[in-house]
Image 1 (cartoon, rainbow, N blue to C red):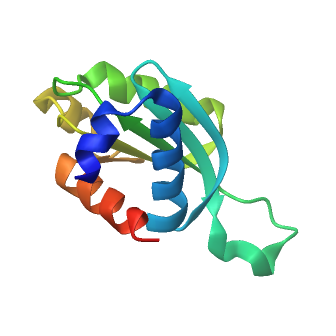
Image 2 (image 1 turned 30 degrees about the vertical axis):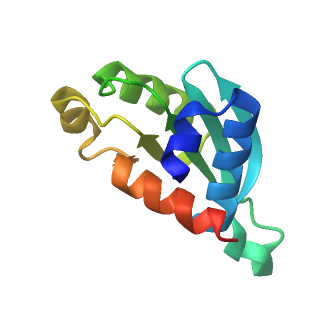
Length: 130
């Protein structure tokens, strides 16, 4: 079970899982991959932009959380602040435990997508096959 491995593996292995999921499952090119106490943070660029070598690539922001409780609204605030500092155009937050209602409400109409356990599990299984 890929989700079980994601939840229980050591931090360095988790970073590798997240990096592989971002590159293989989501088709982004990873620029940075940082281990955090709550999981993993990745910045990446679109792989499809090779024809436009001279154009500055847009940065995408990924956070993978492995918490045991639903993520609070503060996580969304922190993510948006980090995205702003990195000039990121869009953020994706993956959570193995879901989100609070306040977090969902705050994320509406903002450049961040909240992805639930089911999507995380699907992404992990897709990237594991490659």
